[in-house]
Length: 189
View 1: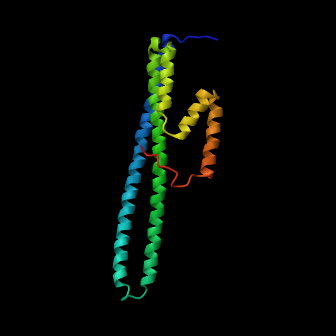
View 2 (view 1 turned 90 degrees about the vertical axis):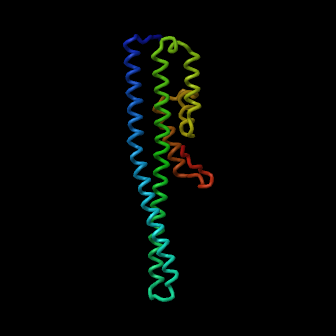
View 3 (view 1 turned 180 degrees about the vertical axis):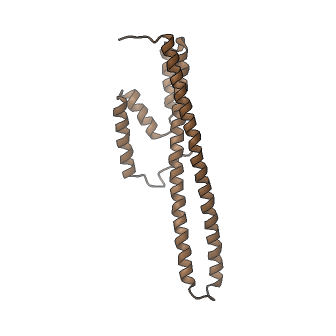
């Protein structure tokens, strides 16, 4: 079955691709506000940990002179532990945002490249242009999930719904069996 898009259909496709790119870019921009909240949280928690540390140092100097000092030190340790846990949660949230931002950026670049090819009749009909574009998209993948998804869709020709379900299953498995921290590099770019 062969069909060709007319000029109007190509123009509509390009507009839709550009709309998608704009939506992705705006989503990334909005997500940056979440990152700023995380940064504020880090600053807040860091300041409180410093204050607790200073209090602990004072307590250590006064511990011989005041009753109930052990109880006060235990309270400080508990607070420090809770703040450290919150900082850890914030780091994890930032890592998830960073991965989301990277993915959306890669999609945006891919959609822009697609719009560029489709907008030129000579490029749209040139198989070498399509292959070059596909290779550029593949080289742009920086996360394991992206590479696996590319492989499922382009190499194995899986339908999109099937590829998504396969990846969801793999990602659930990875959450159940996480990689040890020393083996799990932080993917911040």
